Length: 75
Image (tube, rainbow, N blue to C red; front, side, top):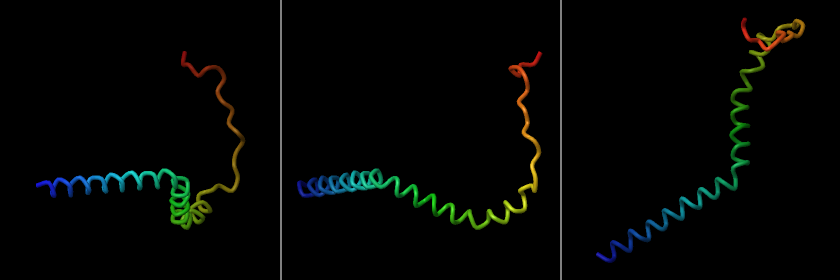
């Protein structure tokens, strides 16, 4: 019975160390991981965007719109 308890305790310690180690790795490498994911997303989405932007963008724009006067509270 003692051997089983020892095996469970050792395996519990190993799992705890693995969780702490992987969490520490992700915490220390978070900037690199985020930049990597951003670049992958931009590569996959960027291929479709140029043709969509060329088709949807107007050739010219109108004048700037002025905000309404006052606080915008209805009377």
